[in-house]
Image 1 (cartoon, rainbow, N blue to C red):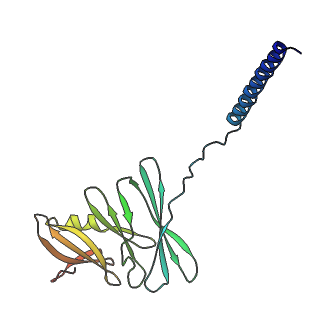
Image 2: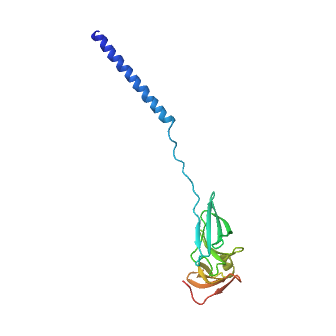
Image 3: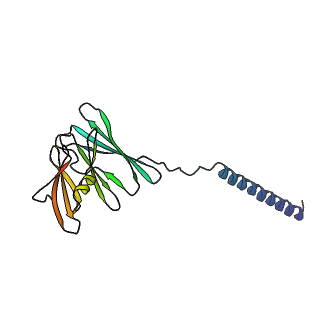
Length: 194
């Protein structure tokens, strides 16, 4: 074989090798695109419920939140820990910027009442709940006392007495009141509870 023929054979072998490498590489690229793993899908989970127990451990209050399109549905359930019986006592749909929460000292001493806090962009409100009734304490107070505004409900002074601290509408510290759930009335106190 001549020198010229061997150069042709070498060049032909080199060309065939390059073409083979090109097709193998192209084939692997197409396979990896065809069978690629899809991106992970984010998993949306419901918010964990908030559960608060009574001081004596006999009852618990559960708050569940379900987010919608610009709203949140709050559901509150009371549970007798001894029997395991749970009952829905309150539900409310709020705009996304308004929140409901379970304050400290939510249970009355006899476990018959709980109170909730509603926080909005311009106001704070309080509700007292039983297993059959709801009292909007803030609305009842505003209808009776236009010179004061509720700043906080701090807890219970007795089985039916919710302690409320106020400020004066024009500024300055206002008195404390008891909201008597049994009579749905307010009792102004001589000292301020802080």
